[in-house]
Length: 81
Image (cartoon, rainbow, N blue to C red; front, side, top):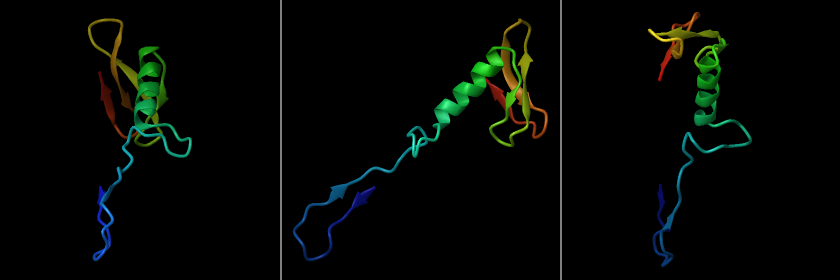
């Protein structure tokens, strides 16, 4: 974002940046921290809380014993690696 000076003044323009989804605000977890927490739970073969609806997300498996993602039983949100 760019802030321009008031018209008629000789002050230079001041550049300010807007916060991103990866910036922590007010002590709340970032989007990155939330996703990592969900993925770590699924990788540990545990059910986790869905970030979209708060329902239960369970690990999904491919041909190997390692989870390839998870799916929410309430809203069908899917998380894949």
